[in-house]
Image 1 (spheres, rainbow, N blue to C red):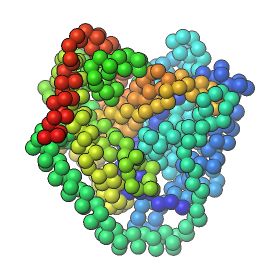
Image 2 (image 1 turned 135 degrees about the horizontal axis):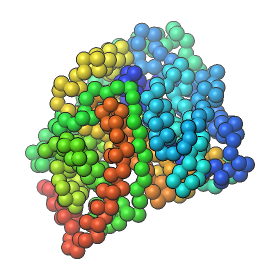
Image 3 (image 1 turned 60 degrees about the vertical axis):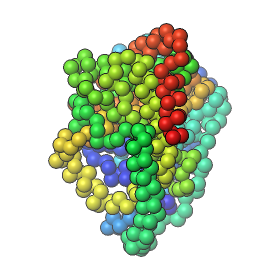
Image 4 (image 1 turned 135 degrees about the vertical axis):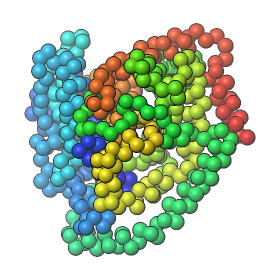
Length: 487
């Protein structure tokens, strides 16, 4: 048995039929590299053999009576791989359109909370633009179980660096303890209810210091962008349960060329490309706001967190994407300086503050509040907190094999929220940067139009960076930012 951390449990409480809190991914596989050839039965059996002893794949939720405390994880003694790994096929012609339509529908289906919170759909019949017959695996794991980093580690249990090599299995496997009875859970819940106020000082102290840091940085002009200051767009409102998915690749070499030419970071370049793509997308629809879009960028605190329990060890920073700037180099310069400030600001705040305050999320009242927020459409009545979420997940720089099949693409897809119906997640893998875009279908029905602007915007930025002959505005901006931070 393991009690969920407050942050992990919060993703359960945030979930409604429209606001689904699972993390998805599309894994494109070349089955021709499988030593014994492809068959669904063999793939399903191989997955089962490699997840059987991994608690994250075989544990399920157990609620605490009366909702007195966060749920606990217990072993699913009736674990059945057939309830988690499913087979599907695309209708002909089985191309990109059919794949994204199917994955969009699957992304809009909730996970069954009576079972371990994950599933995979093995999708056959996909033919890529080169005419190759590939297999796609669409994965879903609840955010209560994984964040970006831990999710990538879990996938390693099914991946190897050679077709016939055993999986890497990089994560630590912790055996299950005993399964508590109802009386024990009730006792734990009562104890947690009475002792929870004792944790307030632990959460309050770092938060007060964080507020003081924010005030100081705001006065010095080195604070990150503030939430609730985003302009409203068509994808900033109450969402439905329908999803639209788009997938696209960019060249990692091109991104690194821009990085080298300008002195920016890879993350700066990715965000600048996103800003340019969103700018042109909104401009073509006469929706471009006068002020810049504001993105939430999740940030892992796994290396600095002092909390041992919990799957989610994340914080977040806010950054303006420069959608109000037409010049791509100027936009990149803005992001280079503002991202530096935002990262320094975020690092100055306790890595565990979000986790500490999440412990006070009451299961019943939190869930009721989220449902009321959605039913009253409050996301459309208050200032926009942020426009979208953009995540950058580091991936392996070498070829990987999933149960013997070479991975041609690892495309992550994050959740969308009431008030921010668009999520962009990128992952690098073997020389490519895979971009996964998911949106509320009613808010952004033509999500593929946005996706196709990413590689085009990178090309524009690369040409602009290649034309630079003097010290770039990015390097100047970084020097200015460094001097300001020291002063």
